[in-house]
Image 1 (cartoon, rainbow, N blue to C red):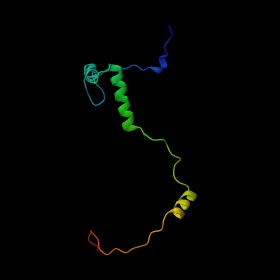
Image 2 (cartoon, rainbow, N blue to C red):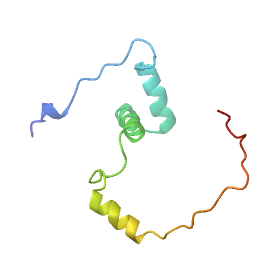
Image 3 (cartoon, rainbow, N blue to C red):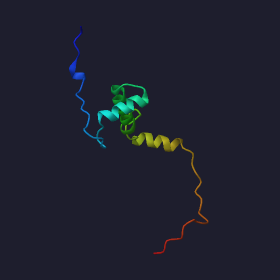
Length: 95
């Protein structure tokens, strides 16, 4: 029988009562029953939802644009005619 690698597993302890930081085993069992999975899968589903909510879901880019890239964009972007504002939705500021 192959030996399991224990370093890939962590101990998991249910809480004595439900709180914002943990749940009881009874709650985990109710979730498992409602979802049609076992308790281990409930834990994986909860961790996945937390990961999607908290961790970035896109590949990291190369950081800010360089000055050369900004110049290239400005060169390629269409020029816009400057226009004056005839009216405003806001009251003019008085100084």
